[in-house]
Length: 217
Length: 176
Image 1 (cartoon, rainbow over the protein chains, first blue to last red):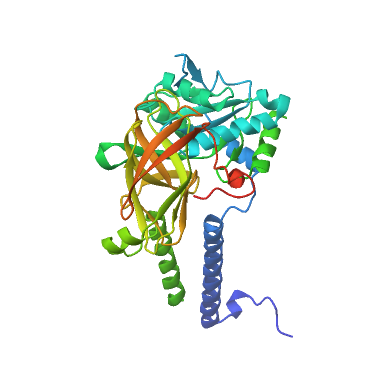
Image 2: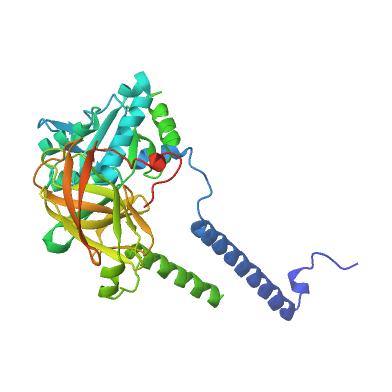
């Protein structure tokens, strides 16, 4: 029976060289494996699901802002705390999405019955060039329900839009005028100012109502 | 593989083209033929109430072309606004984009086009006075073939939806 543990001196130099070569190959194999696993870990999408969508959104959307109300007073994320709110960005020269959305929010509030006054509707005009705070005050009165209309300087609006991870962009039109592309979603913020959910423009009314019920529940 | 990629690229560019140019393009018919054959009828022209200080408002209607040639709505005028433009609206993700239709809006021969929230609309720009719910507002529309048509917009509440399209925000998704 061959000695399973041959002494080194029993091994010929040639066998020694062979052994070292095998060892080196094995070590390289380990290196390739470890690096490969590292790369896979780095490049593969994170498979760990967030604790909940709400938590994931809540940490990203919403934040500090300071804007002007129609009566000239300052409204900030801090002054809104304590009551849930639905916030929407738009402009009064928007003939379509903005009145449709604000009117829809007014209707949904009606459908909530006595819970309808448990949240604020906030409309932020991103067009201070055309919309003064007073203009916005008169505009939101068209919808027959209390809506807090806000705007600010370009810088203040940029900060608010950024805080909500929203988007707006002035687009020049013929004759030196402009229109504005903007996010058409409604952000539902809880009493502490954290995002609870979002109502998309093309979302059905029953789904939107369910989200509002959860907001005021 | 390459064929698939090409097909995807072609599809992608078609979508982009469609988004950039939502008005269906058709060969412009000969002017004489259009003038003779075009027959435009407007149904349920209406607008949304505006507030004092609000610079623009939208107007909506259904345009029927009973003629044998396509026609094109190119613009218009109204005593209540500085200018009248023809716009479309589209959603890209959650972003609303409104664009003027530089070439106007085609109404196909024997077809109808509905201007409504979430889609095409007439923009009344530089409003000289607020549009009050319940009032009627005169509007003159200009068509490439049919010439000018006079109509009256019925001003409805700010969030009004088309009379025949209550589902626009119900089960159906808005058309954008």
